[in-house]
Image (cartoon, rainbow, N blue to C red; front, side, top):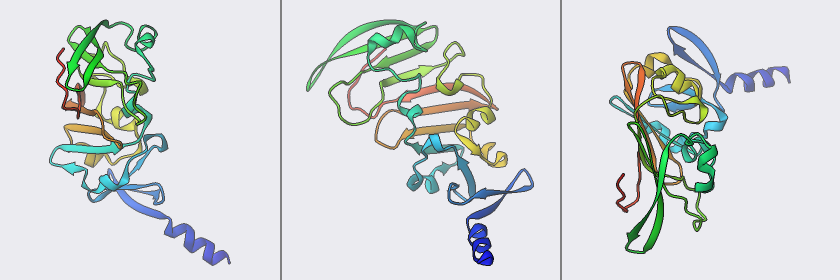
Length: 210
C-alpha cells in the first residue's frame, strides 16, 4: 500500500530547470508553454488550451479567465464608481456615440499621457470588461495587483505566476493577456526589463476615439 501511494505521489510531480537549478512542481497545477513548465497562480485562471501555442518570437500571449483581465482597475459596475476607484484622478467626460445598432454612452478618461475609453454594458449577460480601449504610459496609474509602468518584468510575471523560469522570461518584450471569453486584449510592452507601456485593444467593430 505504501509503495502504491509513493508511486502516485511521484507521478504527480515534474522536474524542470530554472536558472540551472532543478525544482519540483505539482504537475496537476503546472502549465506547459512551448517546451517549459510554469505554475500559474490559481487566481490567474490560465486557459490551458491556448497555452501550448502561446509563445511566438518575443511575444508571450496568454488567455486567462482571471478577474484581473476583466477588471484591471478593480471592480467597477458603473460610471458612478469612478470617483472612488483607482481611476479617480483621471478627468472624465461622458460621450454619446451613434452606432448602427443604436446610441451608446462611453466615458472618456484622460490623465497626462494616459487615455482610456470605458463602456459599461448593463444589458449584456456575458462576462465582459468595462475597458473598451486605452493606453497607459506613466506610473501615475496603478492597476489592480499593483501593476504599473516602470515595474520589472519579474515583478509583473510574479503577479500571475508562482513559478516562471527566468531564463525563458528574458526572451519576451511583449506579454499579451486575453480574456478567455472574447473581449478587450491587454498588451504589456517592456523596454529592457521595465514595463514601458500598456495598451488595451478592443475586439469590437465599433470605432471610438479619445
